[in-house]
Amino acid sequence: MSTADLPPLLIGCAAGFSGDRTDAAAPVVQALIASGLPAVLIFETLAERTLALAQLVRRSQPDAGYEPLLDELLRPVLAQCLAHGVRIVSNFGAANPLGAARRIRELAQELGTRTPRIAVVQGDDLSGPAHRELLRQALGDGLPAEPIVSANAYIGAQSIADALRAGADVVVCGRVADPSLVLGPAMAHFGWAAGDWDRLARATMAGHLLECGAQVTGGYFADPGYKEVPDLAHLGYPIARIEADGHCTITKPPGTGGRIDERTVKEQLLYELHDPAAYLTPDVVADITQARVAQTGPDSVRLSGVRGHARPDCLKVNVCFEAGWFAEGEISYAGPRAGARARLAGEVLRARLAGVAPLRIDLIGVASVFGDDASQWFDGSGAQAPGDDARDVRLRVAWQHRDHATAQRLVREVTALYCCGPAGGGGVRTAMRPRLGTVSCLVPREAVATGYDWLDQPAADTVMPTRGATA
Amino acid sequence: MTFLSESAAVPLYRLAHSRTGDKGNRSNISVIAWHPALWDVLVAQVTEAAVARHFAARRPKAVARYLLPNLHAMNLVIDDVLDGGVNDALNLDSHGKALSFRLLELSVEVPAELLGHLAGPA
Image (cartoon, helix red, strand yellow):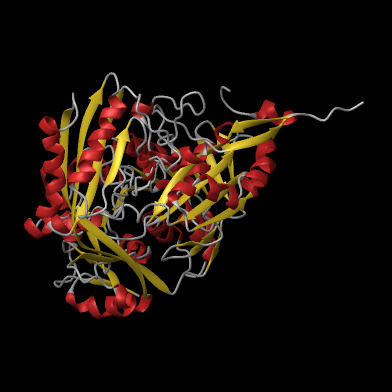
């Protein structure tokens, strides 16, 4: 059968980040099964920091370090996916893909399903001593002196495609490039040649549209009076119908909330993009400068015109390191002259904490997130109004310091405002969190060996664990 | 007899919608025309220089603008505007997610004949 004769592939996305809604998958899986087409379900659960946080968890709990909501995400749909041949591909392995795979096998046993064939994609984790010299070469003086928490290469779609071709029901990844979660299944299904850059780029941009879940179906879009979204409380998550030439149409399950129109798709198409002629992924360089989006029906938009160029020679690596402590504190003032009292409290804190570390001061309700960390507006030198007559204001201060006890001084000073600060302050909340720094670098693709392992031995297969080697 | 038509200054949110993304210390803000007829006004006025001025308080190092005429959209890439980004910033909104709505406050001069294409309440 030639590629052109193959049926389209449906790929549904039921999570766009770690912490996303966990009830999204069921309607997506229902729609995938009802289509009668080959189908894949993906969950994208790794942001830039998620992996480092997962590594920190794994230090104290060696079996953990994968997506903490794994059970809640999979339990409602795993049995149905296995029964109907809907494959599952996700980066929910985070810092412990093998641990996630084991948990999925247990979950399948608890649910009484057949034993799933689970593939674990390997190669992204460069945090061990074997790769330290590689990082040193790539970062030079930029290699952090502080202890490294995580180092992960953004690897591509090939291992996912290989595992699916070999019959995987579930493919568990750590750090792969988000769009590769879609490209891998499309490569496996259509059998595209490596170097078929246009098709690889088209499916990559389908992945880009899906990777943030509801952000293409009306999530992160509503603006009352301007951009209305029906039933934002029950958003449907996206399904991409990918054609043999790689073009895609984005839809969502019937009966769900949200909207898909040219506007929602354009916003997501440009989300976290830089040069639209060169969207860099490990698999291909995508070019959307000639792309078009067209409404093809209710809640149905087609993306076409994406072109591709040869993939980069290097892979991006994110290195996270211990960077001390972050401390913040808040206190509220309300009623007459609340703004002036909150400002006075900020000045008290600045005096008490002077000379230690830069202190950010916000008056929430007057000016906060638009200001910069230098708190220029607080001094009256920025563009924001002082807001002394504001009637309901929450003072927030934040800083960071390498030393825990020093960082904690901020927490103590905010708490002390109860008795020592301006009149009527209440509702103190404070927080201390370990700080993670990040540096990025590029490493030669050849320096990162990727592949997949089977969790379980497939029936009547080899005794030793098999590894599908891919360059 | 012809009269010189008058223009009106309106906030950008009446001409375009927008979303912010971030990578490290770099913010990207899309600006997407509500109506194709408003595209030329956006190209003429939402320039790199105008955006740099608008965000002067955040001291951006550079602003690059990429035009996507097929989509009636542009992508603004603003460097070093996030106080180090999600891992370093002290800002409550360390991603700079809200910055699209800061940009949408930019004042734009719209010719009278295009006022009918503006979105939303005045």
